[in-house]
Image (cartoon, rainbow, N blue to C red; front, side):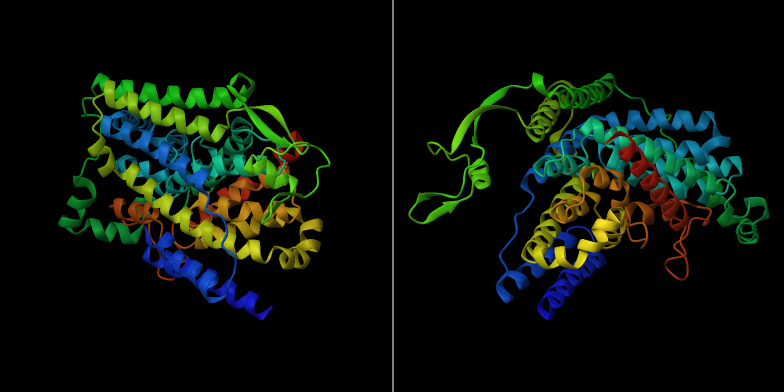
Length: 480
């Protein structure tokens, strides 16, 4: 028990130190924790989440190529037109725009271009920018559990299917999208009259007395409406949306996918000796695809969805390069591709570290948590949320914690219901989108706070995640 606690502290310490450095450090420093567990304590290494990593690489490559073509500018321009047409409703419309941009692209980092526009519209309408900016930043991350190409959703589906819960990407989105929209609207409603109006805020009015401050606050005019979007950029968006439609189509109609001969264990097969030094169980035979007379049988298995996503995304990226003037070098230098590669390293290191620890102590954890899991299965949402506070990646939380949840005996519908709870990294305001939002708000109303946790994202974040999780849980129990 003492060793188990010491090793858990090593895991948590690696995550904490990595989160302090940020970016690639979160995954890289997890490697130090992994080395200590394996070489220092002799734990058996877990399995790195290669399938999820491949999907992220394919998806962010496609999204990055679309950004390089100018397609992202067109999406931002469409969103800006909507916001400027209804400036008085910006507290509700801004989070919807950032949410659906994330749903389409699979990453919340698209918010950087839209956030200055949100702030500009709010200032010119006399609305306290903290109101739309705070909830819009939250919405840009909430959309990750609602995107068909986001790592969190794809990982949830693949891990669930491997653990006997037959779920598809569209079925996940049918729960997560309405639930998260309810959460966002609840957060927006709570933010609608948040704080003092600008004309009654003494701190803001004091800034306006300084001519330089006044010029800084009202002098800039952030907009994308003056950009001339070429047809090639629009075509790139059409290709990207077409790729998403193909993925969703095949996720619904998997019987239309090509099938291949695959081996599976005959029911009731027991341990079988393959070679003098290799003994495997029937389940391992399926994974290894070993053909043994009388133990395995041939059956037709459709192409796996993780491969479908990779093939479609990479093909779409190629089409954009060929037909939409998208420069690969520009894509590699863009924020979408770079943030995606950071996520790859984070998931690689964090998930491998977590799997190594949990797989070695699964029996002990089942004994300790059996009563809680049996009586309060929804309490796993608290675990997901707390882990997410340390790990700035929803995909990494899913990959690291979902296998453990299934092994603890928690039912798939319950886990689907608590999926929105994997977003908790707004709690400590060190995520790039939150920090950027504070900097974009020229009025100074969106703040981190003197005591760190009293920041502009805490209230909308807690309301959104709590409401989304409750609604998702109720929907999942109703339909599954």
